[in-house]
Amino acid sequence: MSGNGNGTEREQWGSRMGFMLAAAGSAVGLGNIWRFPYVTGKNGGAAFLIIYLAMVFCIGASVMLAEFAIGRASKRNSVGAFRKLKGGAWPIVGWLGLIVAFLILSYYAVIGGWTLAYIFKSFTGLMTAGGVEDVQNIFLTFIADPVQVIAAFFVFMALVVVVVYRGVGEGIEKYCKVLMPGLFIILIILMVRALTLPGAAEGVAFYLKPDFSKVTGTTVIDALGQAFYSLSLGMGILITYGSYISNDEDLPKSVATVTFLDTMVAFLSGLVIFPTVFAFGVDAGAGAGLSFIALPAVFSKMWGGPVWSALFFALLFIAALTSSVSLFEVVISYCMDELKWTRARSSWIMGIAIFLVGIPSALSNGAMDIKLFGMGFLDGLDWLCNNLLLTTCGILICIFAGWVVGDRMKKEVTNDGSRPFALLSPWTWILKVVAPAAILVIIYNGLK
Ligand code: PHE
Image 1 (cartoon, helix red, strand yellow):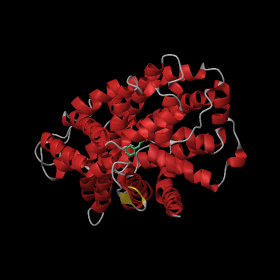
Image 2 (cartoon, rainbow, N blue to C red; image 1 turned 90 degrees about the vertical axis):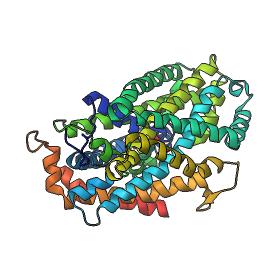
Image 3 (cartoon, protein in one colour; image 1 turned 180 degrees about the horizontal axis):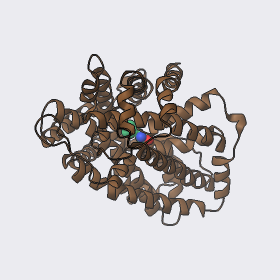
Image 4 (tube, rainbow, N blue to C red; image 1 turned 90 degrees about the horizontal axis):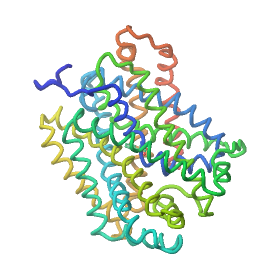
C-alpha cells in the first residue's frame, strides 16, 4: 500500500472481485434500466445495439481505462490526481468532476428515494389501482407531496452515507458484493417472467429486430451519449475508484469486465421491459414514466403483482444505491485527501450538504414551481450535468491522459511494462483524437 500523503495508509480494495463489483455497481444505474431499452427500441433495435457496442468498447472503455490509470498512478482523489501528475491548471478538471458528482448525487438520490418508496407502495394501494391513469395519478400525487419525497430522499441519502462511512473495503466493497449479485438475480427472475408472458415475442421483436433504416447520425450520437453516461465516465468516479486499485491489477482486463457487466445489465433490462409492456399493450417510453407508471400498471394486471412490482423497484433501488455510493465517494475522497478530514466527518458533513442542495430537486416535481433553464429544477440540473459538465470533463480527461501525461499512462496500464497491452497504440490515439472529437459532437448536439 502506498501512503496518501497525510501519514495514514490509503485504503485499498480487498479483492479483485470486490473492486469490479463496486465499479460495475457505479456503472449499472437507472440509465441501464430505464433509458437503454428505450433508446435501443427507438433507434432500430439490433442495428443500434451493434453501434452501441462499438461505442462502448472503443470509446467508452478507452476513457474508463484512462480514468483508472490516472487514479492508480496518482493514488489521489480526482483533484489531487491531476495536481500530482501534472499540476498547473489541470486540477480544475478534477474540480469540475467533483462538482458534477456532487450535483448529480443531489438529484439522483431524490429518484433513489422514489424507488425506495415504491418498493413499499407495491404492497399498499399501487397494485389495486385500476388502469394506467390511476397509476399515473398515484405517481404524480406522490412526487408532489413534499413530506413523502423529502422523507424518502432523506432515508436514501442516509443509506448512502452508511455505506460510504464504513470505508472502501468494509463499506462500499462489502455492500456491492451482496447488492450486485442480488441485482443480477432479480433481473434474471424478472426476465424469465417477462419472456414467458403471452405475446412476449412481439416485444422482443420490437426491441431487437434490426432496422437499419432507423440508423442516422443522431443514432450514433445517442449511442455514444448513452455509453458515456452508462459507464459513469467524466466525473472522477473511476479516478477515485482507480486510486484504490492495487499495483498488480491488470487494468485493461478490469475495464473489459466492468464494461461487459454494464452492457449485459442494460441488454437484459430490455428483455424485461419490452415483453412486459407489449404483453399488456401499454406504451413504452423511457425514464420515470416507464418505471413509475407504465410498468406498475402492467404489474397490477399480473398474478402476484405486488411481488413483481416490489422486485422491480428493488432492482431500481440497488442500481441507484450503488451508483450514488460511487458519486459520494468522489466527494468523500476529496475531503479526506485535501481537507484532511476523517472519513466519518466527511461523510456526515457532505451527506447533510448534499441533502440540503437536493431539496429544490426533490420539491420541483409538483410540490413547488422551481425552474432551471426553463425546465423543472431536477430536469434542468440533469440536463446541465449530462450535456455540458460531464462531457466537457470527459474531453479534458482524454486530452490529459493522451497528450499531457501519455507516457506515464502507458507505464500505468502495462504495470511498468510487465504486462504488455496489445491495444496500447490504438488506445492512445482514441484518447488523443477520436474520443475528444466524438464527445464534442455530443456536446454540440446537446446544445442544439
Ligand atoms: N451510470 C449510471 C447509469 O447508467 C449513471 C451514473 C452516472 C451514475 C454518473 C453515477 C454517476 O444510470
